[in-house]
Image (tube, rainbow, N blue to C red; front, side, top):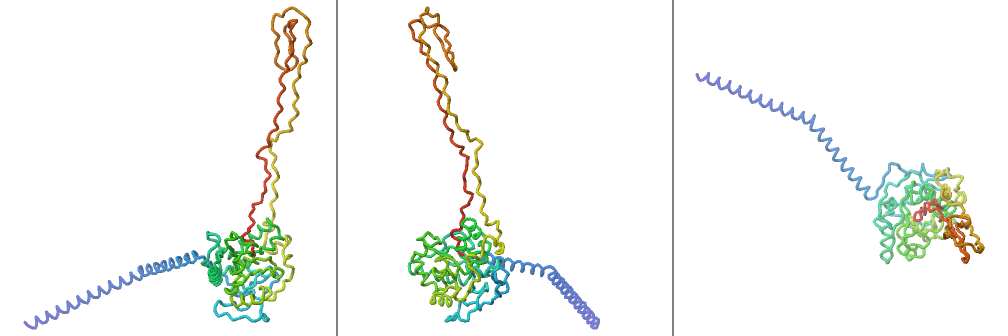
Length: 429
């Protein structure tokens, strides 16, 4: 009896153990199903959600960069392969000057011509050009005051130049002087508009003294900026040279890495008229060397133009410089419109015939009726014989008033089709 009970207990234990194993197996199976379901559904959802999160984060960063005035492009111009002027120059420039740890420059004996667009010491002038699609990768908006409040690309500069400009403006402010930015970075497209408009409104000869050909403007490097002051209403013209701000600038700009790019005594070398308002960042080392040796960039690089600057471009070779001749044509002046209602010359009025007074009539019997006049031209008709004693004097008809000469048609025009947009504040190269 005891043996049978033990067998029953053992069998029950085995059944319980099998049940537990089955339950564990079912739990494991359900767990595996959940894992598979997670891998098939949940994981892709997590991956997609993660990708969306990082995409939104990247977009947010891009928007912040755009709001701060940054512009980027995928082109790299750190090499010199695509650079050159009309002569096809491919001279390789020196290593760009670093903002930190600049070495003092003591001589320009072995200096190589720098035509690398990204270089801080690049030379851009009437013969050395930038690629039309070149846009600096590190454009930012300097924390300085400008003469205008709206957002525009001309508020931008390359990062190194922008930092130096902030220091320069602070230095001027410490001396009680007030400077404001007027025009910094300028794209190829904007320079094209300025140049063609100036040629159209001012002529080629005047334009070449002050405005660079598109692609040949320092403003496209993001290293040059025009500045002015309140005392001259923020104009960028010769009046700025008479200000205290300019006097300070020409003696102190080099301390911040800037130079007066087109000095008064270097016009034959630079090819541009004196521009006291146009400053260019080249780094403190080079700026100091140029200031102490009274040099411009062309002299530093010993650059010799291949032709007379004033003859480098004319109306016949515009297309060689990528300019559509139609964009500089002066519109034909509209002819004076003659109104269809213009009056013909007014003829001299002819007065009506004045009736000749009748002679004193002879005595006749008293008339049976009073004399009457028939309206109209000609002599009056006497319908009755007047009394012998009365003298009949014929009153002439009133002489008509002369016609007044009409005032010319107010729609008659003699207008000037020019739009007057001369780009005064952006005529600088």
